[in-house]
Amino acid sequence: MRVGEEGIQVVAGPEALSRSAACVVIRQAQQSLKARGLFTLSLSGGSTPLGLYGLLAHDPSIRAQLDWGKIHFFWGDERHVPPDHRDSNYRMAKEALLSEVPVPAENIHRIRSENSDAQKAAEEYEQTLRHFFHLGEGEFPRFDLVLLGMGTDGHTASLFPGTEALFERRRLVVVNRVEKFEAYRITLTLPVFNHAAFVLFLVTGEEKAETLHLVLEGKGEREPFPVQCIRPFQGKLLWIVDEGAAHRLQRLTNKDKEEGL
Ligand code: 6PG
Image 1 (spheres, protein in one colour):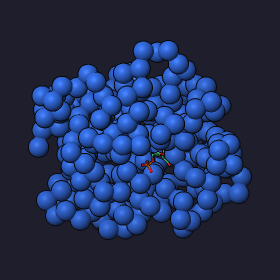
Image 2: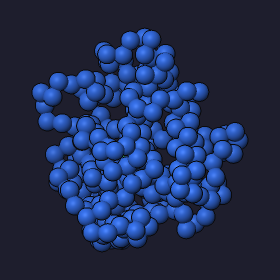
Image 3: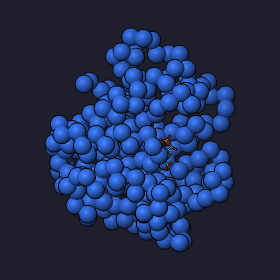
Image 4: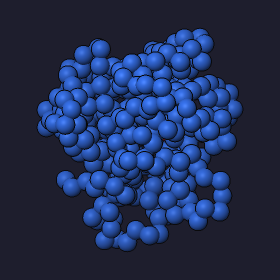
């Protein structure tokens, strides 16, 4: 399957979306392994990547193309709950993927959100990233691949509209208060996402069609959605969206849709 490197790819539905996303993961992993001998992958939460995680874990031809011992897993955001909580992004990835593949425990770099002090959990994760990527003062990690989703309100990771975390330019990880959930979230910051080598958004479902249209085709008449702030400086940005999510997009012709441009 040919999957583009940048732009927007429209696929039939969630199953096709997971397959296209798996192709991107394999391609980016192989490129990174060839170049540097390891692959750093930042996972997203939410329900959309579940199908992808399932394919990576259980489709024999996909699973066999990944050198699991050389993949390092990180998270773009986490809910302020323990790792066995039903809302935990770590738990979701662990159950769907990480417990099913031969990945060494030391390659799994989770956000320790069981810490009752969310601020401390964020600081600790920042140190984890600084240490792993050997970062000096003012430097940001360059993830080989960042997976992200989008909410109907245009949030991504735990960067919600109107929240303070959107203004962070220095730190790698912050706590973000999300009033609508009356909860704290721990999230990587915009400069981290924008230093990635490759950002892949996965979006499905008609309920996101209007937001996706405004995000990709809006005329800038409103405050930008958080997802619109993700523009990797020296990296690639690809959206894989299904027909449900794409049905309000005007600029894609049917030919583009078939070719995945
Ligand atoms: C989270 C996510 C979040 C998610 C979107 C989309 O922790 O919830 O990281 O940003 O990707 O809310 O979620 P769905 O895939 O469930 O629609």
